[in-house]
Image (cartoon, rainbow, N blue to C red; front, side, top):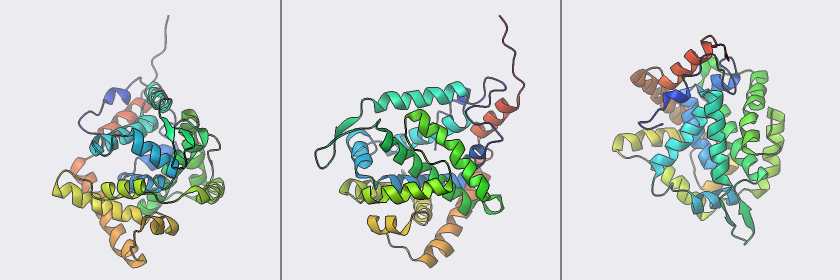
Length: 283
């Protein structure tokens, strides 16, 4: 997911730095679950595509068509850096995105101007993403599922990233999330750009093995989407297929990936950094 460049210096130093959240946070717990994050991440990309302005900005300013692998790597690196990285690395990643957003602007289908740094647009991108991460965790974590209070704590903690990016009105609880999604629903619809992006995502892979793995994960991701989102995207997978086939396959694939790859070096470095004693500053 990160490509060949892990940049462990973002995670293994300085000693004692908890980063934005710390090892005891619910954010670390959710974002360290491989299957939940993979499936949730694919679901987030599909859900985000249904905002016409957000999708138009991606279509006009992103290289996802010509370099889908690089695009996925950059997204994964941003999530891992802001979650598990040192405070300085997380803040630098956020500032880098803010700097890019300041130059992303254009006109929507109705000719109205848009800017990628609009607080409402940032709120949608952030909220769609973290709601899918949370859903992915709850579906695939088994006995590690969060309690209702922990779900609220996750949304409250992770809201910090959206706010640092410049978002307004980021929901910090399940009740606030439900209210936000109900309000924004009237703005969401499928567009040709959304259908193109989702088709590319579901068919992504440089080899047959990668394409098979991605199809397993994206099929499971479809099951995390609300029914109206599946209908908008024209994806029809019966309930029995989603629950009795797609989810077990994705769960098994996630277990195989963990077994094959071992403990994530990023996770290992982050935990070692957070647990190390701080070095006193002298001067």
